[in-house]
Every structure is written in C-alpha cells, then in structure tokens.
Amino acid sequence: MDSALSSLKQQFSQQSHVFNGIGKINAAQQHELIANLKAIDLKLVDQLCSVVKADAKGEVSSSISAKIEPFKNVTLAEKADSQTRANWKRKGLQMIADGKVAALLMAGGQGTRLGSDLPKGQYDIGLPSGKSMFQLQAERLQTLHNIATKAAEGSGTPSENVYGLDVAPQFIPWYIMTSPATNQPSIDFFESHDYFGYPKEYVFFFEQGTLPCLTTDGKLIMESFTTPSRSPNGNGGIYSALGDSGMLDDMKTRGVSHVFIYSVDNVLVQVADPEFIGYCALNNVDFGNKVLEKVDPSESVGVLAMKDGKAAVVEYSEMPGALAQAKNPDGSLVYRAANIAIHCVSVPFIDSAIATSIPYHVAHKKIPYIDSNGTLIKPDKNNGVKLEMFIFDGLALAKNPCAFMVKRQGNFSAVKNGPGKQLPDSPDTARDDVSQYHMSLIQAAGGSFTNPNDHKLCEISPLISYNGENLEPHVKGKVFTLPLHLK
Image 1 (cartoon, one colour):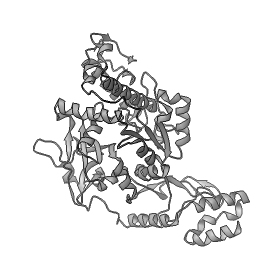
Image 2 (tube, helix red, strand yellow):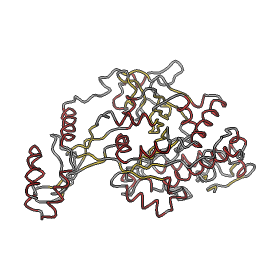
Image 3 (spheres, one colour):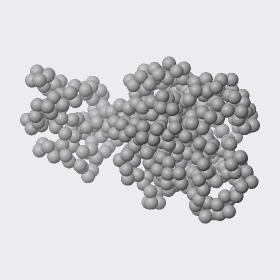
Image 4 (cartoon, one colour):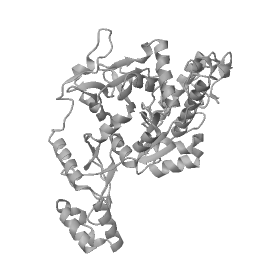
C-alpha cells in the first residue's frame, strides 16, 4: 500500500490536499482513498480545470458574442393536412412494428424541489389514480404497443385501420438512464410494482457518468477524507453512457434505427410518439426536436436557432433582447421554437456524438466538503463548481436537424417546482393541465360533463387511450360528473 500511496502522491502533486486526512484514517479507509483516486482521470481533471478557469475569465463561448440566426427547418405539425399526418403516424407505427424504435427516458434527477429525495419518476402529482410518473409512462408504452398490434392485425378502430401494418409489432425497448443516486431506488420501484405491467425483458436501466466537483481555482473537493466529491455529468452524458453501458450495442443488435428521448418530469409526454418519429424517418432527420411555440419573449425557455452557422439551443439568458423581441410579418416570434427536451435521434447520430467531444458547462453550486478536522461543512453560498454536458449541444453535429412544432396542450406539462406555492411547472399546474386536456378528449369523443367549471379533476387511464383514440365506446353520448377517473 505504501508504494501505491507514494505513486499517487506523485501523480496528484497538484492536488496534494486530497491526502490531508491520511493520518486520521485507518488502513481500510486508506485502501478506499487509493481506489477512489485511481478512478480519477487526471487528464480529464486538467481539461475541466481549463473550462473552470476560462469561465472565471469570461472566456467560455456564449451566445452573447455569437452570430445568431433563425432556425429554418421548422415544421408546424398542426398545420399539416390530415393525410400527411396520417402518413407520418403510419410510418412511425410501422417502425415500431419492425422493431426499429426505442424509447429512452432521462431519469437521473431526484425530487428535491418537490420535497423528496426519491427518484422524480416515483412522484405522484395527485391525479385521481395516484399513479407515479413512471407508471403513467409505462402504461402509455403498453397502449402504444396495443395500437400498433391492432393496426397490424387490421382489428383496430377505423382511425387505426388506416395504418394497415404488415408485421405484428414487438414491444418497444425502454432504456432508462439513471444517476448513482436514483439507479437502485428506480430499479427497486419497478420491481416492487412488477414493472407496471410492461414486460421486464424490454426494460433496461443504465447509469449516466459523473464528474469531479472542483473549486473555482481547479482543486478537487473532498466530501470525506477518502472520497472526492462527484456529480452527474448532465443529460449530455447520455451519448457516452449509451456506449459505455453497452446499451447502444443492444439497440444495434435489436435493429433499432431511431431513439425517442425524453425527460421524466413531463407528465403529458407522448412517449415514443409515432407521428414525430415517422416524420423524422421520412425526412431523414438525424436529430429531431419536438418543440412548442414560444409566444412571450420574456418566457424563460431556450429556443432553437443557428449559432455561428450551426444548429443550437440558445438559452433565454443568452439571447440578445432585440432578437428575443423580433417578430415575423404574421406577428409570431422569429425565435419561437421552444426546447422541451423531447428528441428523436438516429442511431448513427449517437455514434457520431460519442466520437466527438460535447462541451462542458459550468454551474456554480454549494458543495459540501470535509474540513481539516473531518467535519462535513455545508456551505451557505457557492463554493465550487459542477460541470455538466447538455444533450442539445449535440445539435451542432447533426447533418439534418429539425424542429417539429406541436401545441402545448397534450404534449407538455413539466413538474419541477414544489406543490402549494403558486409556482409554474408544479404538481398543481401539471395536474390541472392533465385534467383540462383529458376533459377536452372526452368532449371531442362525444362525452359531456354536468359540472365542467367546477375545477375538479378528470383523468383518463393511459391503458384506455394513448392520446384520445378508442374513447368513443367509453364516452359517446354519456354525461359525466367530475371528479372522474376513466379506467
């Protein structure tokens, strides 16, 4: 052990503080320290230090100094004719039937702002069913499989038969990217609920990577005398995680060509949306972005644009005011394609992203650390940085990116802030969004309500309808009283 420790002290000569507690730990803990330090890539640490120092000097590339131009390849899904949309959806369902589609859930976050340390996907937003976000998504995938099966058999409703698929579909493989903090709890949750009825053999968990936490002068932060502090490397770590975990190889073995990627905290997400996937496939899109129309220039959301000639998401804080306010002749914003973290990417694109460096971003944070006495200090102000990558930075590598613009209703309602605080993107707003949308689906299918203005909840089980189909037999000509859970 002495020789290993001596060797590490030479390697970590610029980070010698990591050995400050060596005289206060026992032999087993020294072995732990040695193992943890051997796991650190010092070349990567040097690279991260350069990013941190450049950030401190204001030298990190930002949109403020970049040439920003409108993103041109925007398709307004709602303005396409019904036959075109049917063709997109038929293509997507055919791809599902052929086993060419995978769903990839980004589920690395905990529900800290929701008042929970559990994985965010376990959170129940308060719908009548009491279902977690994990369960709602699993059941949507199950129903989408059933829709494709009926279309393949020619036994669906008239609106489904039009797709006339040729092959009985497989289940969609569901890949779930977790973090070290959420991986085992997520697996345990799925196990304890029998995978919510989705076939276990089609569900695959894998962890995103982590990066060392640093001080602003590039020093490793120690969370104990044996352990350097680490944090998840951001959703942009998805590319390398797919390669390192073997999940990308699994996709290729299965014949997957397109991957639908989404975040766990969107309670209205249409998981593996066949219309969006079909559009991307028919138009040879390698990085598709499902977007909403931004209507308020002050809305704090990133938008798709061209940044120094390459496709990018420009954050609200980086968009020059004049550009944020710019409007088209019809009154719409020039920069209106709002990013909602829903993507459809091709498998060859993932290969190219793995082979290319995605930039790191600096986030200044309060990071607990161990002091010289072995006491864990929880600072009350920012004392260090966490580095992360963003999935949308892969846009710059895309040969044919697109923005597929859809309406907000029925596609997006985020759960980020805690309940009961009158904040946007909370369980309260998400619950209302689900209720209002499901009421509209029932009304469109011929149902009605005795008390539609009572602000009581309405929920349609995903096992009945993926997105409004198959409702007429359940609701046409019927009158319902809220609250309602249609199941």
